[in-house]
Length: 437
Image (cartoon, rainbow, N blue to C red; front, top):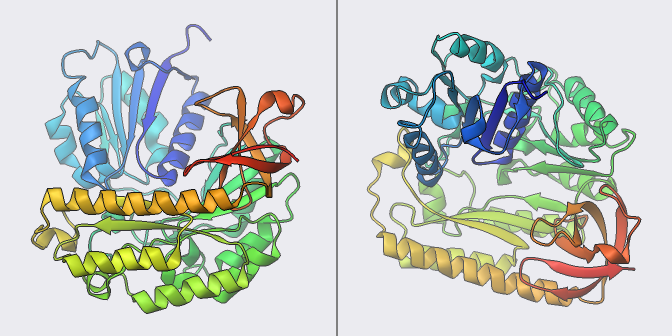
């Protein structure tokens, strides 16, 4: 293997990108490449990119600028994913030292593009699309596998670039998904996460139509499965059948990631989210009634064009009313090609930062209260591996999504993938500490 070509791959953005990177690495390993951690030592350098926020693109631009004067002869630089899809030919014109640019649905083209680039032929590909039902080679890390069940999105939220970069909804055949999940389980990945930009809309474009609940019921009996998760859900498609399915299937995580984005009806309408504050709160009530103990995670955008102080206070009120178990908060940044980009970005940056920090502080304070209330309670966790911040501890997750640390010397025989009952002994706003029950 010492003479094998070396590849460095860095992933930006969502779990869908992480799954695409796994596919890319599997294809390249089949072609004889070995992974390295240092891009300067790599024969092939890949950036799998995100276009949802300008911050993610800015990081990639910084990486690419750095190669202008240090790329060595024969080294191949590749840009994959949503940023490549959004910029198209402009990316190749701006960075002439980039050899490969492939759009969001072109992972199957990667080995051929690399071979061509090593022969001196530049490959920029944004038009053809992968067959969504094509089976992907397996390459996973640890006990976790991320399996895309659909691609694209039919919602046209005014701020979102995903329909442009990933196209319309295309659900994958359930039998194909079942085979991929079975292969991951056979390879030791006992926690499966099903991915989709709007995962709860899965199957409505299939013939005959299907549903995410049907897919969960199909996968749940597979041998070796310990936990089954899915992200991300749109409030419009979380019906009672899906909620009952989560409650009834013991291996399905009691965890729903359902972005609210705003608590103001006026802003939700400008965002084209197609639901109201009242319907979102009704969904929360139904979820908590049908699934006792369900953990709810949300996303919020602050500083959307036209967001007034009253609109922001409506979002604060929604957070306080629901009491989310977790939340991601982002400052709005216009994305070229989206309807919102034509609106005046009229909320000052300092106001966006202040609102963002306020929501983050509110959420962390609530999480601290939730976690303190769990002290002396017992949770069953799935051990994922050593903590990256403290290898003397195992890191695991509850059946919801709470992060729990356990000293490894208390359970010397434990292994990643084990289910372990844990008594919670201490808490921060982000993690729990426990001991074996």
